Image (cartoon, rainbow, N blue to C red; front, side):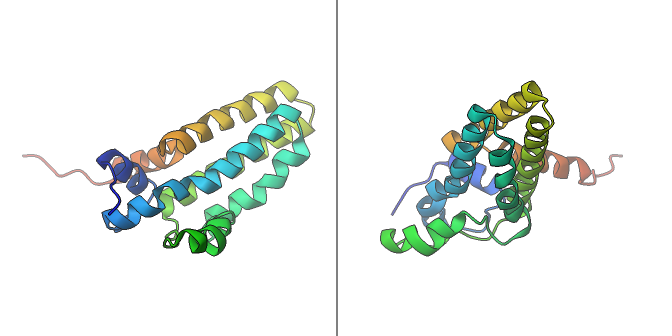
Length: 163
């Protein structure tokens, strides 16, 4: 049986991966970072080359993660790697993870548009910031946009009246 730390479970659940037993979550937890890792590498390449075309070419994939059951890059794991590894498929994305993909889509659109419009410094700053945020998720499993999503949910939750 694979082990999963309470911190890793909390970080996965914060992204909307709830209702999974420890063994299942431990099995797929590293693979929850595959799509963000591919996006990280793509955004880094677009930023280093200051390429608006490369940056904007990633937007449909990130947007797919916001509106589809899973991120389009999850196909690599779900229909390939997991069969080689003998592991279970990634579960469907919850609202926090889809929100993170939507934020990424908008962020990349802003960076790519800035680069295309000649605002190179702004585009590069946005690209570097995206790389930094994506690196946190890929390296630690802590997803900043999912955390922000959860904070927003907490604020909307009704508070009990006190006497």
